[in-house]
Image 1 (cartoon, helix red, strand yellow):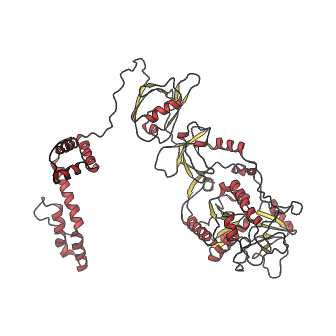
Image 2 (cartoon, helix red, strand yellow):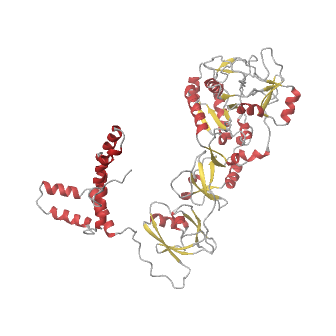
Image 3 (cartoon, rainbow, N blue to C red):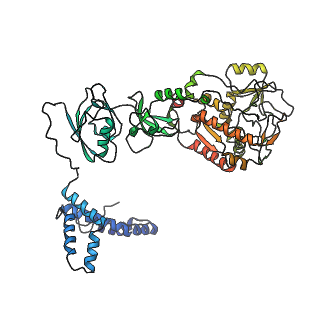
Length: 600
């Protein structure tokens, strides 16, 4: 395109240049539509206004303007005082009202600050009583805002010296780079602190405003900046520093809830780590108990229920039949559709009968490497997002008998049979005429089943009417290999054995609502009772509801740190929609997973 003429020379402003552009571009535009677009764009009033502002600012910038006076705010006050002594007419009243507005006063104050170029805080003069012999003393001034100083102090019981115990990463003291661990504090704002308790010194600091002056004797060795990489942990317990008697400074503590993601800022102290909430814009870290310290505390005070296998003391016992030929809502059978899905079986849960009549409870493989997982403290995590070419994550569903887990799983399968799948269980019982091997069950001999048990090939297994039933690891792999989401329902103590790089399980706990809501929503529902040898579905009883609530409480207290999501099945439709939304997010969004899954 040829160079554009700018009319009257280099003095032509940007405004005139833009106004002339459409006419000069007209010979080079092919269509009337494009020309109309150009006229509309360059004729836009808002564009003209911006250009005019630009030119005005550019003009004044070249003029190098200077303020006429530096005390506009004081002049306005003098003017207001002068006007008060004059006879008040409407114009004077309006001017007085205008001058008294906070916005106008603030504008004049900012004008004076800019005019005087007075941008720095006013610091008090240096103290004059510094002993010449104290050549190692540091005089430090920090301008204090509402933010805490970000340092803790302690008193040496032998010498009585007040020293800096720790510097909180990202806090005011840390960012200043002037105060270090081991420094001895002599004075705060001219007040000697040798004979004061740490609580009294903290009170002095809390009451101080503006600049704070410290007289410090530097420690022998100052800290070097940490070069640690970013480390994130998932909290597996709730923590409130105000309730922790062991924390050295409650004000410096960081509170968090189970499931929160924390970024570790420092592990220099073996007992108290420094951390902040992931994504928190505030750079200041807070104190949290270290993993080792918290594990030791929990191990000493854990209630008996947390170190025993999950047991439910009940006079009645219930089982879900492993011999159902059509889908019955065994958990929550208010609306039984009778839909048959090949291979659909709930993970086997044999009756919780007396030990005399049921010697073989459900078993799962044992491994010492998971012992520490039973003491929930922290788990190191990293962001993970499933790639399109990866297998889906295993979805593990956990919940007490009767909560509706079976029906939720059934609804998921029916919603998309090509996307969701379930495992085909193994059994040693004889195949029936209408059954096909690998569809309803995988039929194997008792000897082979027992061999596979010895080789840890089963996730769960049990014995029912002298026949073995079990869910194998290979059956999970088979579903995942078909590029499907595998829905696996297991006892909660099995979950920790599935938490591997291969499966990357996402654990969802289906929780019952209050017992009042159970009575209301399950009054027409049924549960399969072990008292009936035919496995008939019977209406819920009050004891069923109480057992469901108690079982859920035990599951959550003992295994809640392994749950990624909790869904309360109050209303079946709402619970299903929440479950479906969770699945969609699981496949498309980034989640925090144990770092071992990605670095094994």
